[in-house]
Amino acid sequence: MPLLTNLHNNSKAQIVLGLIFGICFGFLLQKGGVTDYNVIEGQLLLTNFTVLKVMLSAVMVGMIGFHLLKHFGYVQSHAAEGTVGSNIIGGLIFGIGFALLGYCPGTVAGAVGTGALDALFGGIVGLLIGAGIFAWLYPSLKPVLMKWPFPSVTVPEFLKLNLWVTIAILEGVMLAFLLILEHFGW
Amino acid sequence: MFEYFTLDSWSPYIAGAGIGILSCIAFLLSNRPIGCSTAFVKARGLISRAINAESVKRSEYYREIVPKVDWPFMIIPGIVIGAFISVMLSRQFQILWVPTTWGDAFGYNPVLRIAVALAGGVLLGLGSRWAGGCTSGHGINGSIQLSLASMITAACFFIGGIGIAMFLFRVIGA
Image 1 (cartoon, each protein chain N blue to C red):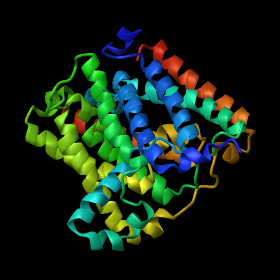
Image 2: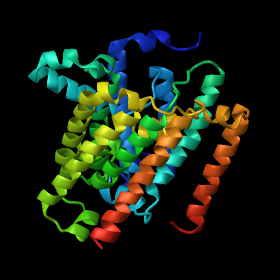
Image 3: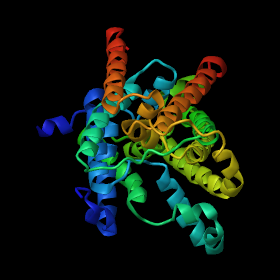
């Protein structure tokens, strides 16, 4: 089995790896410009498309890399079934917070590293409170979270298409979107 | 080569491609998507436990997402450090209370900005756990795995975000 199970189960090594992945991720987020409030709020106001450029190029590269690794048995899928009650309602609540705060849970930590105090005293403190509220509500929210499951776990299952055909289509759509952005100078 | 690391910023496509590669390495070495919102549950659980250990022991959610210092926890201090290294290399570290986009629309009073940011943070913490992930966990890493739920969730992040941002800056702050 080519999965690196021994490494995955080594909890001390994983703590160090978590820190290293975080450092690299934070570095790339900052260099990509997305730890800046103005850039993120600009994306939500559709005046600055840096956030989508970073996200879509990450997904374009990662999608091919992940499925090649998966094809050879080095990684496994973690995609899980979603529901309207969890993903759509939760996603919309997230969106409201995203606009008010101007950072998301990863970029807020990056912004703290650049010296943004609204990210620290508003964002980090708020996220800790919000996570606590969810933990408190969780037992009573469970029926809502399970409400109206989506028909499929993955996009190729949903579209009833071959995996690599789906990937080719999605890569094409993302590439076309980025080319349109560049064409109009957004 | 080193000079590249001292640049103020990189092309978003280069940074994005780097994040895509990093995500693949995380799946390979740690068998996990890089997600950021779980850390806040764990940190909150650790804080609550210090105040009242019984309440955490009784909580169903903290039995599922165990409050401890592990991979999902370490990602957040890592991001703070990584972004800090990046701005130190480019000499851009700057203590800031109110970002300009906010200040130009609503004024540079830090109390108002922190109050709204705090409200946003609470909703972000609630929403990310409600949806089971964030812009990174769902938006990037879930989409990489072709998860239908993750792509729908990411769309909702932006639908909600664009709607409220437009209302905030184009209606109230216009």
